[in-house]
Length: 281
Length: 278
Image (cartoon, rainbow over all chains, first blue to last red; front, side):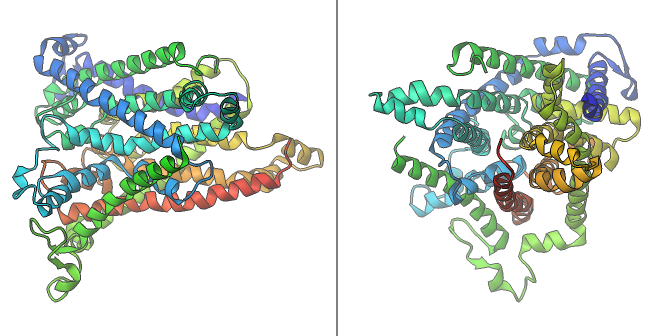
């Protein structure tokens, strides 16, 4: 009866498998279309560890993905706990960031935080600044505020909805029982509510972490060209007119994929071990 | 969390989820919006004599912008992706919802794998493969590429939909002589339709959002609305009216989905209430 799985698995194996193996071969130096035929060579992977620019890109990947993931999870979980069991208009509307593409989120961030954007005009109206240049460079500055805000804005409702879904399925009376038996609000949160929602938080953490480590559009468009992450570096190398460097892009992408898989596996393993309520599910 | 605090927090978030779009609407309707005016000094309708339409929208309907063909490409691709995705994912979801078999964990992991692999890595890999197969730069290559990231969503939502289907109902119908076609047509389809429609809408949405896959596999020759917006953004400058209009255009499917989903999910609850509880 497992026949129904056939088409899906075949399609994934064909398209996904072809993509993985084609790119693996090219990252190992097999790219006759661009006049590169050095298969097998680890040259392109070695460059990842010797090129200081790529080491820096790896560091930036972590420093842009980890804070965004953590902040999004924290705010999203809090929002998920604040959602009512019955959907009202507010809880419908807050899904909106989830339903627009990342490029629209980038457009929104730009319209609010860019030099002549809404925030600058508001500050000018309040007399804080006089010229658009006086606004700190939020988008393409060193701190990467634009990337952080965009990722958090887009992902917060995702975590919130996962958490809220677990809450509606869970036994709502448990919290009341704990209160009746004298638990404080903090104790109820620590021993009843959080263990209930932890599996949802962990699932959201895995998916948002995987996305943020490999994100391209947001850091590419809001990074100002000075804070390239691994994904952005791979994009730049691949779209460079010099096609002979394309195996390098694929080596970066493969390393990134491996890193993402390891990071998510580590996160899930740590979650199983340390978080209450996750083990045994 | 106290109720008042929760309501306040929800209100703040609902505002931050919607208010940013106001800036796009204003930007797309402005005729002159100089620094440091908070609102445009001349709106489009005050300049009707010189401007037939708001600048951004006027550009989008002009043939030179290729915005309308791109919109058609987006919609056509997303429709095809949704249909293929449903045809592939629904049978798989049915198995995952109802059957127990060996290797189930591995199958589930494989079906979720496209969520773990960065879109860029998938796009680069598929671009390489598409060049080998000679479909790079064609809508067909992009179509095949788009199906991959929609599969995890489709399989997950459809499994949940299938789990809600009470198989005793189908058995009862069969006992009373219904054939497999009758069971599908009179039982499964009406009961599952709202959930399947919701999953399909979501797959449609995912496809219209894909930028990196479309650009790399389509080699820039397959132009969707999301790709057009992507090409205009960046550089740290303020948002121009054309990008604002494009961004609003790209927001429409999500808003429609939100409205439709609300209706669909309510209908599903009603239907569930109508089926006998076990």
